[in-house]
Image (cartoon, rainbow, N blue to C red; front, side):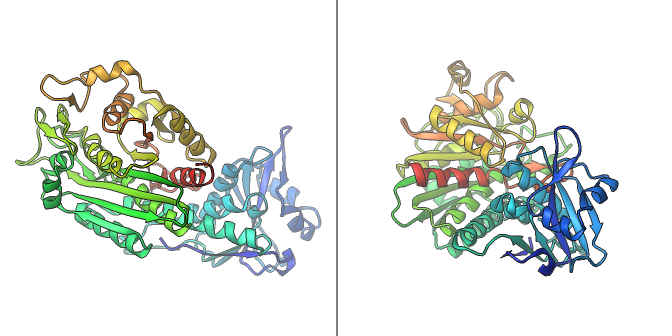
Length: 492
C-alpha cells in the first residue's frame, strides 16, 4: 500500500494548512450530539453555528458516519469533515474506527488535519493508516489513492513523537500482513512467500533460515511435506529470529501458511474457494509481528516459525487414510485432507518448542467451526488457561475481538486413531474449533504457556469496508500479537 505521510501539529485552527479538517462528533444519551475535543476551535470559526449546520445536514454523531461542510473561506481548508465517534466517552476503538471511516472519506485528498488525535493519538494514527489502506498492485487503473498527508493535532513533544512512531509501525505491520494476504496465489506460493518473508526479515536485521523440501525431508517434517505433496510448488519452512536489547523473555510465534487451500483430495465446494488465498493469514501475521518487534526494539527474544505449503489435489497428493510421521516422531492418521493446517502447525510447534521459549503464540485460519461459533469478527483463543485469558483480554483491548474458549478433555479421546497416535479430525462435527485446539495441544511441550488464536473469520473481510477494516485481508491478529509482546516485555 501507499501510506500517507504523517506528522504532528499544534497550530491554531486558523493557521492550519490543509484541504480538509477532520473533527469528531459524539452522541448524547438524550439525542443530538456534541463536538469532540478540537471541534470547539472549529466551531468558534463558524461563530458557534457548526452543530446546527451539521444537524441540518443529517449529522447525529452515530459511529462512523461522515458529514462534509464547506468552510466558505472561514478556514484555509475548504472542507470540514465531521466523523461520528458514537456513544459518549469514546474508547480507543471508537476513535480507531472513526479515523478509519474518515480516511476512506479522504480518498484523493492531498492533505488533511485531524483533531481525532486529541481524543486518542495512537488510535487516530492506526485508524487513519489502516482505513485508507488500498491494494492496487493488479489494477490497471488504481484510481484515487489514499490521502497524501495527515497532520494530527498534538504537541510535538517526546512522548507524542514516540506514540506516533509506534502507532505508525504497528499500522504498517498490519498493512504488510494485508499485502501478503491480498497477493493472489499464483504469485504468492510457498517459495515466493518464503522469499518475501526472508527479505522482510533481513531488512529488519533478523536472523533468517529457510528450509526447502530437501531440508524438510532430511529433518523429518512429515506434516508439512504431506500437505504439500500434491502441489508442483513445494513447501517451505521459514524461521525469523530477533533478539532485542536486554531480552528478558523468549517468545515463539507460529503461523499457518497455506498459500492456497483446495482441501486436497477432500476437496472444498467451488463457491468462495477464491477466499482460500487468505489461508496463510496466520503466517502473514507472525512474519509482520516479528519484524515489528525488531522495529520497536522490544526487550525480548522472538522467534517465528512459519510452515508454508499449498494444499492441492493430484496424483501425488496425500490421501484420507494415510499416516504421517510428524516432526518429533508422533504419527497422525489423516481422515480429512482439508484439515491440513493443523498438520503443518504441528511440525512447526514441535520445532518452535526446541527453542525452549517462555511463551508460544500460534495463529491460524484453522476451522470453519470458529466462524460458526463466533462469527466473522471474533477470534477464538485456546491454550493454557492463564495465558489464553491474557491474550484474549489483550485482543479485546486493542479492538481485535477475541474470546477465550475451553479445551474440553472429552474431545481428546475423539481424536484417537485405530492405527496411529492420533487422527487429524474427530468422527463428528461437534466442537470442531475446540477439537482442533486439542490436536495442537498434543504437540505443545509440557508446561509451556501457549495460546492458539483461530482467525478463520476475522482474517478476511469478504464484505464491504467498516471502521478501519477494508475489504480482503484484515491483518488480524497482528495487533493482538504485538500488544501481547509488549505486555510480556513489561510484565514478564
